[in-house]
Length: 402
Image 1 (cartoon, rainbow, N blue to C red):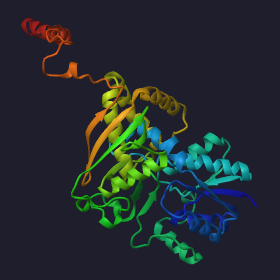
Image 2 (image 1 turned 90 degrees about the horizontal axis):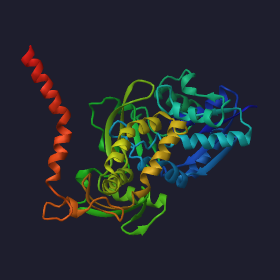
Image 3 (image 1 turned 120 degrees about the vertical axis):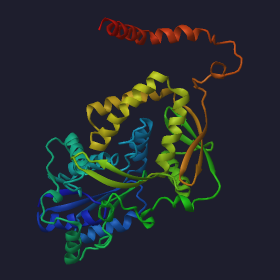
Image 4 (image 1 turned 60 degrees about the vertical axis):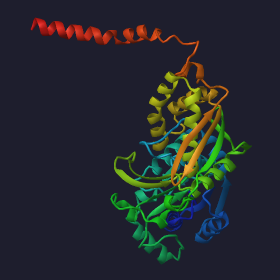
């Protein structure tokens, strides 16, 4: 019997897919469960996979690698997709797919499978990574070939085969969680005019229910990487977990947006990213002191490109490797501390300091100084205005001649 390695989460889609691969494809299913800090006990998910028919289950704690090698590089690059999305789901898929391929090679499995739909972005992210690490990979994407056309059909299939699944027909929106964020889409959220119900949210309290007093925190960075909160050094997982707790208590990191999927259509997504939101603001605060103006402009011009590459699944592409190397070089001097005030959904930078600061009070002050001659600005302005003056002269001559 041929083997298939399935990226398994225990959710509705992959629970049905595991059984479908056995019943309809006649395959031996090896389930792979990636622990990315989704806040669930892995034990019950592993037991569920075995109960549903998996011949073997691999479980990998990938939290440390996920934060240090995927999330922190995205934070370093200030990567945000279409102005709002901090890429929490997008950046997880290449890591899961990479580990899937490793298991497939170990088990001599002939196929790889995932639960992504034919309308979504995840199918691209998974499969591009498969082909990067296994050029001759054979992929089974059930959503692109089975006759189950909706989540309602999946619930019916689960009932028929006695598979326990989360959610319900009445409340069929889906969610995806890891240590970076949680996302919600589909079902009742497909109406972009409808405000999401408060009970949807998991990682954060409503801003109106957050504490009535401000929370101040300080975050230290070394070469663009966060290393300490309030002076206490932390590892990557502890760092992000602590910021999720702090941010969640203060209602930080909620996003409701309509985004452009890679396959072409627009979709509505709800996100909670408390810790990532705090890190983004803190990081930019330290950058404001330590990055040269033109370097920052160049980097910011590349942010949409970087974010799109992550969103579209090209984490291991050559151009992405180039951008990551460039980011590492740019971030060498981004070392310092940001102080932030968290209050009822707002994350405000209120202080920043760095030994590598390019901010010098003696140059910036409006008081008396001995390092800057204000009269020098006269020539500076005239030279910058020269091309505009020439254009104006030309237009005036054309007007007179006409």
